[in-house]
Image 1 (cartoon, one colour):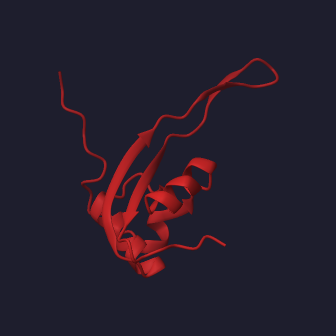
Image 2 (cartoon, one colour):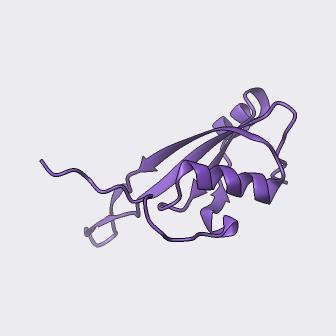
Length: 106
């Protein structure tokens, strides 16, 4: 069986504002932000953990302890006409900050 190619090992140079696409604001996210100082972000699919850490530290001026990533599969949806379509695949990052650091969304 052939090995799958790692998308993050490219020579593509991404800027910090290209890596962090948007924060994911949910009830679970707010709970984790308050109690565990962990924040969710949608990130560029080709970004690796090191790039995500540097981008968050640069954009929000905080100290990052840990970064976890998840590759999320796009859902299959049915349109009004009965066609089957797929939503896009995306990457999610869980960023744990130092206890003295905090990000204010609003």
